[in-house]
Amino acid sequence: MYFGNFQGNPFIIVLVIILVMQNLRYYLGTPGALLALILSIPGVLIAITFHEFAHAWMADKIGDDTPRRQKRLTLNPLAHMDPIGILMLLFVGFGWGKPVEINPNNFNRTISIRKGNALVSLAGPVMNFILAIIFSIIYALVLAFGGSFALTEAGGVICTILVYIISMNVGLGVFNLIPLPPLDGSKVLKAVLPTKSRNWLEEHERILYLIFIVVWITPISTMIISPIIELINQGLLNLILWIVSLV
Image (cartoon, rainbow, N blue to C red; front, side):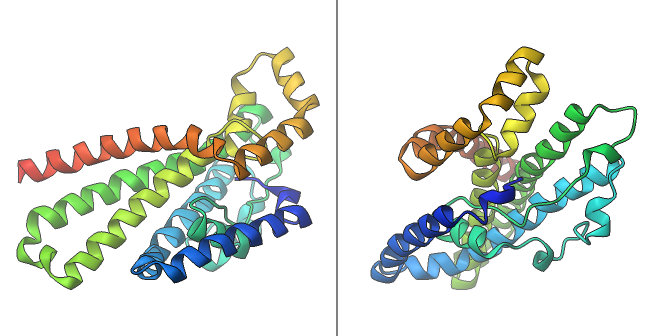
């Protein structure tokens, strides 16, 4: 996703600290919650790393070498981690990585800047959904062939980590597709809207940004995101059960 100045906004930083502290009390005061938090770390690292890598890869594919020059065309998590974004994803359930910088003027002449921006933006969430499917298949295979191992403590830990990887990728993918700036969905929306509507969005981007903040810090985001996440998770569960029934 492209947060730009969003990440350096003092108000956002204070808000993030408040949200993290509120949730930290829950994790410290609830038995088993801290262990669950630790087991979710691989899911956070995978979801963010591949999400940002996908942005960089797509930009590179359509002619912009900015991410390559900035060493973002890598699966090294250290190149993509943003401390505040990681804390948010761990403690609040959605977050972000270090933004991938692009220069649309470098896109191939066969593609418009608007379409190029949309492709780069869409690459991140699509990668998350692909990973969710891949790890759902892996989880199904573990259940199908793991036998008694899946019932052991070690097997339980592995299965729990896989579940977190799946849920983190689904959550990050869905959250980023909300069509409000600065999320990826806003750039995808601009690519499909007629000129007049697109111009209106650009003229009112600051207001839409404030709407995003309101959606983000209130239960509205949960009301919007949760049904979509549940639908996707149910589809992945059906996939897992189908695979297990075949073997």
